[in-house]
Length: 129
Image 1: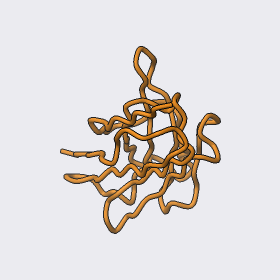
Image 2 (image 1 turned 120 degrees about the vertical axis):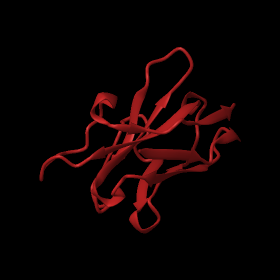
Image 3 (image 1 turned 90 degrees about the vertical axis):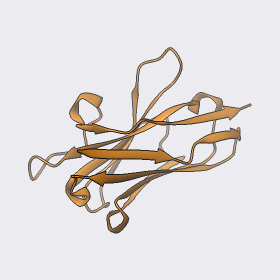
Image 4 (image 1 turned 30 degrees about the vertical axis):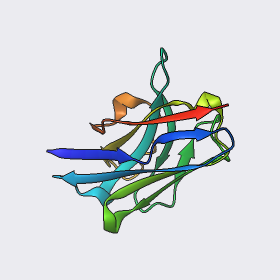
């Protein structure tokens, strides 16, 4: 069984910053998984935020967060991070981390939630304007 536990959410003013963390445990070889962040705002569909490949060198971002969010990973700590800067009210959402075991050499960084096998319970980010 695999567990993903997010933390770091909270209430922050517009323009502020947060750092989200996601710790993986259980039957997971973390370094061989593509990791991603998704978010879901009230009454909206869950949407892709960012993904990072194995090794941490290749990343992919949603257009709405490009330049403000930074995804990274620490394989020694089985931990995924999301640094969020210049927060906007529209960033208010529950943020989820997700994991996908790499299935091929050129597996890519999927942007669809159906591509990911494991999910955390989420951490709430609320931005006040």
